[in-house]
Image (cartoon, rainbow, N blue to C red; front, side, top):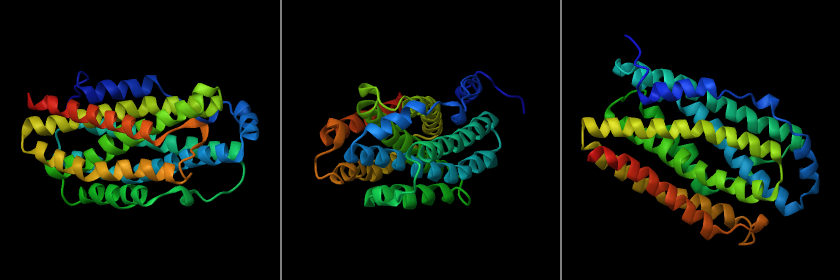
Length: 271
């Protein structure tokens, strides 16, 4: 089979090569100084946000492989397979990045699980592995759609995007933790390609069978309450007094906009 380099997955595959970055080469000298200057609540909020990403990146790195297997079993989307191999590498690199930041900046053990609420655990410990592992025995378009909505649309397209906004508001706007901010910029850059692939795949599935749109809508409606619940839980941890001047209303609104963007992008396949 010859490769079609004009397809979106291959265009983003080539971008992944051009935009390669190494988590080991980001300077953390200023981060260590900034960490020492933060008060207790600010440190806890930073640890919380980084923990949510660390655990999330570990989960998605573990659970992505069945999608690659499902695409392979179809046998006619080599470009998708090539993109997903690059995505697997990038997810592993994201996990490496947060792990390094904890080691070199925080420098002491802490319990990441204490920051994980009920909604977070339902999404990452139940829903994500359930729909991805289903692809090991069912690679139907319906099963693929459920998995991609969960992974690319909700986890990366809504939750991670909202998390990046949190890093920007808490750290970037205040000129804190330049190393962490730089690493997050690279992670977001990678995941923009992942989200684009998810939209492309869902659009293709809908174009092949318009009934898939109902599957997508149903899955989105199942997960949206959990996504908003996760955000609310993150703020409940601080009894309404979130450090860095952040507000739950702002972040729920931001997440809702990301959700609308994803739905509108997939809907274009219906026209």
